[in-house]
Image 1 (cartoon, one colour):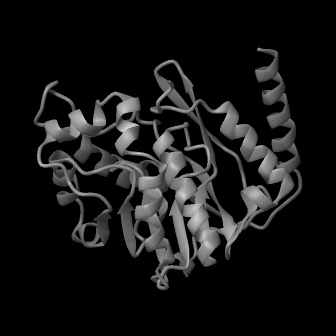
Image 2 (tube, one colour):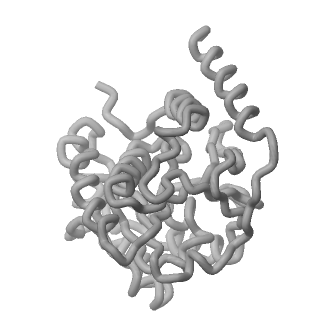
Length: 279
């Protein structure tokens, strides 16, 4: 308990230090629309939940942390033609919803990690980051927003490849904390990094979320829909949000900048790792 209190205190001090002073923020600009933006997300609803403001700017949208179930394929088919044309899954689709639930969604976490692990994600992601047509990648943040292990692995795979190939990486600088049956979304600001200040479109969010909520897996247990997050009207990163460039032409600020490195390390330790093997 004392150690955890110390980490919280350290994090508070680091965040105050990072938030002090001004930094030039840009509202959305056309640089993301230049055809060189790749968006990489772990699960089929994650691009909506954590990257929605930049969905339309991405030339490609990559599902990189899980296979696709037929029900999730039906969700993709209900998106706009533009979304469908830009969407790619990096792993073979499952033949049935039951197979997806048994082999991935509801599988014992330690058994699942024998097949679904960081090395598998890294091997699939790196060739896409390496492509010359992409100069920037939008993905999950280092602590996986709320801690999901697949979010963390996708982030790590993207960052490491971006360093290797001299690319930029942008992430939503939001920390998600749980409070009962709800989540709280804390915007952490720009941290003196190149930053984009923008808003999630509530209309676009609710319209797309409804597709997931009305599309159910044809499997046992029955009645499970494809939306994996909370259903409340404020259960997404609503309001103004900050995206930050954590890797700049191959330089990873979360590793090379001492203050940012300490802050990110504290967040990675404080945010519980979720959906991982604990044995």
